[in-house]
Image (cartoon, rainbow, N blue to C red; front, side, top):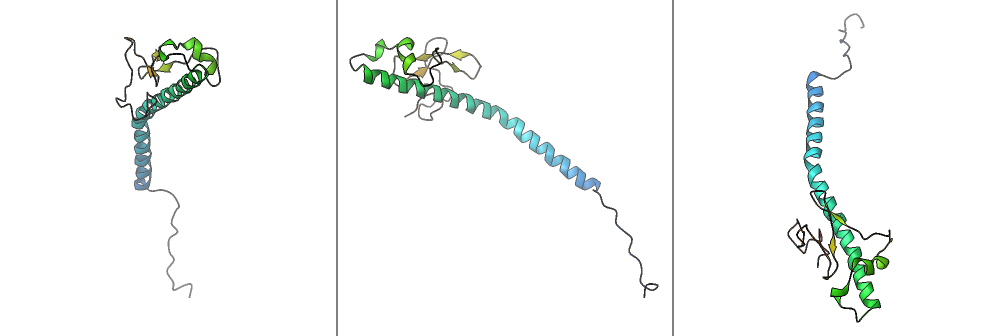
Length: 137
């Protein structure tokens, strides 16, 4: 029976050019997606960090005003709120803007807001209800 049955050629293992091309194209697509999404992630991260900083300042404001119920909001200063901040580092926190410049926080309004170089409110998201760059509602 062995003499009459044809022998099948052994197939060599390995990848074809088409398979290799598909793998390379998928890797390029993944790299492209992550590189284009990196800017949006960075922007969101800066906004999230600003929001967390503003929330800690807001809690410090509320705590100070609870301890000093007759103190007007306009009398608040960074020095007065510094002992009320969680994990007091000895300096009042600042917020990094989208252009990587450090911005101060206006503590004389409630909730506190980030100030730009002219002293007006800095909120690149444009919405006070998104909880990015503001305490939100």
